[in-house]
Amino acid sequence: MKKTSSFSFVLIMFATFIISSCDSNGSNGSKKGKWSEADKKEFYSDGKKELGGMLDGTGIDTKFADQYTKDIMDCLYEKSENEFSSYAASQKDDEKFAQLAKECVKNIVSKYIKQATKDMESYQNAGSSDMEAAPIPESTQEEEEEEDY
Image (cartoon, rainbow, N blue to C red; front, side, top):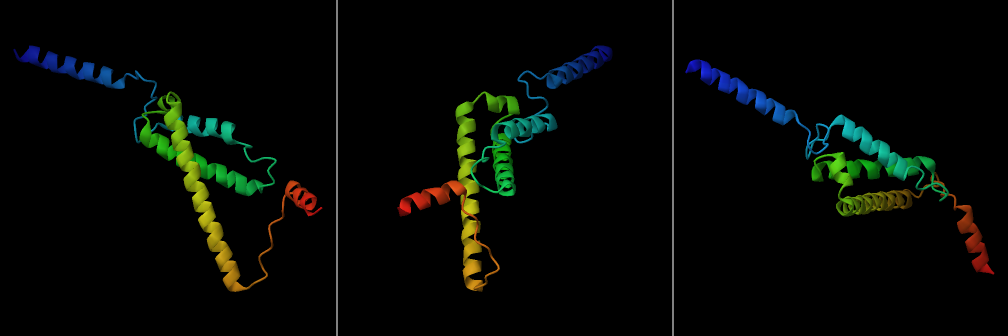
């Protein structure tokens, strides 16, 4: 009886191990709230391909554009990791993923506007001429010149 009991226990443990190590949904070891390192790398790699150069040709400083893109990606990664069980799962629900992206853009733009407002207030209160005016992109300058005529 004891031998059968031990054998059953080993068999159950083996079956549990096999079942728990199976990856039926392509999660690559990821779970909701904690994606695998491979999923994280793939997310950022694909995001960089999608968003990289998004602001090229707009006249926006490259350093600012890179930081903006990074902030969006960090926000979207955090929201996606908490919403989906894996990167693959996030790619199957375009509607939810787009909703998360919109939330991130809204949050990041709001953060940037608040910081710009704070910087402007500090500048005005300081009465200093240390701050240089940001250059106006050429296309905007041309449009303003056309409007003057």
